[in-house]
Image 1 (cartoon, rainbow, N blue to C red):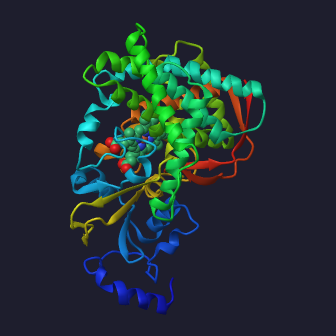
Image 2: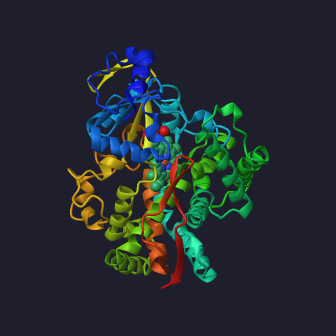
Image 3: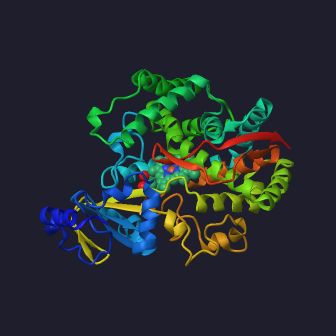
Length: 458
Ligand code: HEM
């Protein structure tokens, strides 16, 4: 709690701004507001603490500017769903644009061209479910190749970067039917580092320099996909099931640059979040040998037959393990919105532009809703569990909720389940320590640090 002098100074300069917000609970602001709470702590942990201490809505002060942290499912539903048109999505637009491009719906303005972009997105077309069903077999084969290489290497590895590369390669197979050369992955990572430096910058963006070689990497990365697309247009592969081939067949009105960008942007959309989710799952499995043994048995059964979506859907323990990892350790834990004009929310009057932070961490572990909320118990997802807490509901929204929920949720779930089943069928993933891993932050996503692991053949 700031001292009397600090609180007095805050009131002297910013006291008038409290008008209309008096009803909201929150920590006492001092000279820098309440921003000190975020120093040295991950934002999701601060948001979760506010949920425990102040309830569903917390008023905080970023310097003299008010902001809200929401931990109430009803209020979150209003902001992300029923009243979504009154809010703008927290824009990482400036931070991300040198890395991603205008084609990305992630950075599209909610009240601008987002709705049109979403409607055109390749993940939500009439043919998308058929494309997705056709990905289980090639993704299984790609995961198997990557795992076998890790087993053959026999070394201890840091799990997050290793699974990130696996995810990149598997997405490439789903996106364009093959694994690209290392140099494409290196360019991808350099561009991601550029965006990350901007996302995490504590100084104005004009003073943040991009990593050396950024422009060349950017040119090469996007050109790679354009050249693939041009080649494919010249010599289409009959019967090919990758996204690029499917888009060429099904989206005739879109130009090559548009089509190629949408394949390239898949990687930024999901490689970090998906690989972080896999790390969470295998870290928890090491801690829970019965859950791991049950997974190994079901995974072996899945590996023993044709890799169809139908059979993957029948693997209920694989799904339960995946959902439980997404509940306990969601990869994306904070999203932001802001009212486009002055408005009423939670009984208070919010000025236009007020930052609203929404975190899933507290609700995913709310003891009023979940039994043994802090423990990894995949059984909670069996016997009606998925219907009780569907993805995108009040206490379970790892992919966000409402119309701007992750456009690739279905793809991510098929990828994660295929990866969990295939890795578990081929390897014992021996994580060296079951102590909670240190969490960093990269590209807007939680980054598990130094999870030393060995892949041992089953
Ligand atoms: C475990 C994996 C994933 C997680 C946890 C995740 C999480 C999320 C979340 C929380 C949002 C909503 C953010 C907000 O409302 O502000 C979102 C949006 C989005 N995600 Fe994902 N995501 C995952 C995988 C993917 C994949 C694989 C892709 C692409 C291939 C992708 C592409 C997108 C895009 C384009 C949006 C923006 C949608 C829009 O604004 O309409 N995500 N994701």
